[in-house]
Image (cartoon, rainbow, N blue to C red):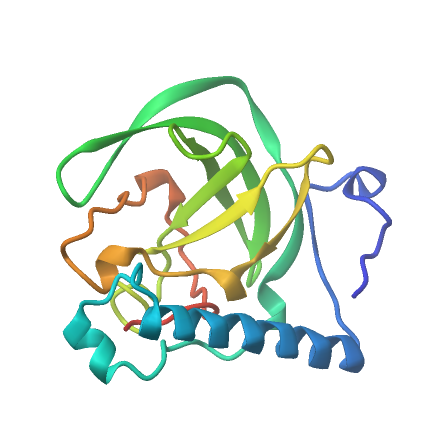
Amino acid sequence: MALACLTLASCSANYKKLTFDSTEQRDYIARLDSFRENKDLFFKSNPSSPLTNQQRQRFYHLNYYPPNFNLIFRVKLIRESKPEQVGIQATGGETRPAIKYGKFEFEIDGKKLTLHVYKMIGDGANELFLPFIDETCGKTSYGGGRYIDLREDDTGEYTLDFNYAYNPYCAYNHDFSCPIVPADNYLDVNVDAGEMKY
């Protein structure tokens, strides 16, 4: 896996697309497949699975896009100068408190995009929450959008990998209430990576 520069700071850029040689691609796919197999096992057999008992009896696996190496980026977190507390509506009707913490800027298919980063109050202090909707939603991916989770670190630089985008629990079971994607996290491109419709 390679970057054109050693760090984003040395590139004077907010993002770089990661590149992989053939060996790195094979290793990456093996890790991704293992992650997905473990998630399928959790959904099938774990009491904390979002699936009902009836759903688990007929569950085989979740649906995924093939690995997409064009949607893996190294990004710089652009922090909000004055992070503000906001309310994110949830599917159950309640409002979840969150901090609008920063944003990532990058490009897909030549389009400049911004993905706002939140910290949900009540989650771990280092948990970063990235909900998004894209042009696949309601077609090949869940209509309510998908999430990516990251853990904050001291570098300010992160791997934004859409192959790990996942559905909220309410995509499987309406008994769950999930944060609704804020309007400013709409990406007007196809993000054909990660989890598909269940």
